[in-house]
Length: 432
Image (tube, rainbow, N blue to C red):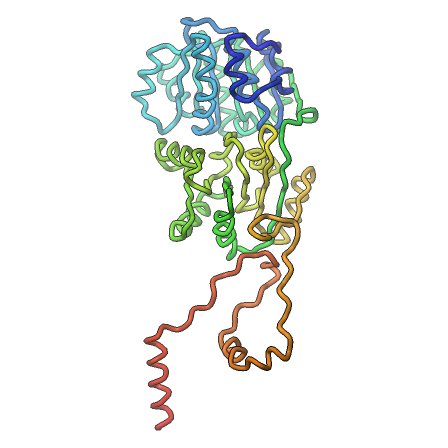
């Protein structure tokens, strides 16, 4: 790989000192118009791996030549922001086209005839089908997070876009995980596609510890609250269902936790504000689903929390890939019971998943030592205290709440007015 001199300062400013395996392996094939699948771990620089060689061969002023399709508007905006400085350095115009954004504003951008468009499939198809965007001069179609994009309805959308492009259009699919569709791409798209897989030789990811915290449903929100108050802690919190995520958000809104939500039903500006607040460290927890969290790059993110155990290996891999990027350390914390732990270890045997506990304000693999019981003589010397403790019986710690589990709220004493009423009633009963 020989990065063009106009890109070198930007590439180095992004923190790269040498090409990552995926950047090196796909550079020449992409420059030579070959169609391919690029497989590399999360956080290995895939956006620049396809972006730089494709931008280098483009002609300024020749209209739309490169189309990049992402599964979510957050990822599309992120890709747009990463590539925009490089496009500007090459005197190319780049536009973003995403769903739920202002259509009129996007149409105004398209009138400037950008050479590069980064888009979500739904909005893009609307523009193509209404003839407001023509793909007649398209040279390359890039499908980012391809394993997700080639699952329905994404496969049909991508095929429609390819059908609207010239027959010789170059296809490039990039992903961190494999897909059963990759060997079948010739059948779906009518052209041979080479597979370049560097996952076994790429070691760009930092040291990531995979913790499993044994807990029940009643204590998951308690865990979030305690984790959110750890020193220098910040995390993406993943959910399997949007409804569960919103329920937890309502609970956290009544507690002293700084959090934001990426809700797929919110306006584009609302979601962008939530993500920006998280990136700037103004909120500690960002609640997301798998689609919203796909491909997000949060530099030096300390942790990822699986509030719900993922049911697909690909989901766990992509979630875990949000931390430990480009050599930084990180941790993944999964909440669940023993059944969840057994399922997770079968789902992703490639990870060493260890039990996690809170120890002195930090996550640890060592269970806290329980405080020693008071001597019998000391108990006898404090009969009043023992009697008072017996009157209010705290809930015993269950198997689902092991050592290191944040304690549930203490039993509240009766209100003073209620105690006076009880004493009055007790006196009446004695007189009778």
